[in-house]
Length: 115
Length: 114
Image (cartoon, rainbow over all chains, first blue to last red):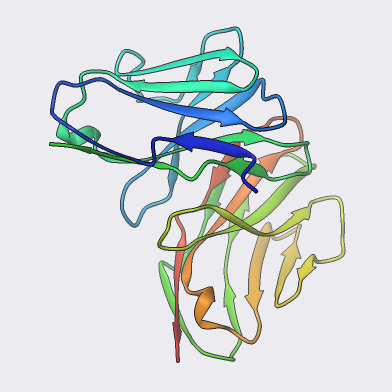
């Protein structure tokens, strides 16, 4: 079964709305989680690293005020797309790392469509 | 920063045939991990195979095997007896031994012809 639960799986909302995406680790603690964005037919682009109890680390070019990340507990990280606009429409995926030689555990992704 | 390159945007293979997907990477680290992920149309990320850089033996998982050439920084994926269900995007990924961050290649779309 899934070890990382991500929801919602699909969101359609109006421009200007803020949208929150949740990523939960199931049956394990994740002090770090990753948020990716994927455009159609492209690779996963790392947006930020979510750190439990501290500020997220954003990749270059990612707007911190647009994509708010909160990692309030060892099992939950949230990504909030603030005042979303059509250009924010994309597929967002979270992941939590396993042991060093283990793969990341990916959520099933969230398809965000801003009208 | 590490870079991962997949030079084949798209490939096709006949069902039951063998296909090899290429991946090269650039790193100054000596210890790291390499992965191949499959992403079907559902967009779930599915681990196909992984390789520890300190291991000389190439990893195998049933019909999937890798050709890991550490000196050449090459990590290709061979799919034998290709099946229709193998059709997907395939991403090569690098992970440092010291850090959790993954670096993904641009992906190769694999088509399987019946």
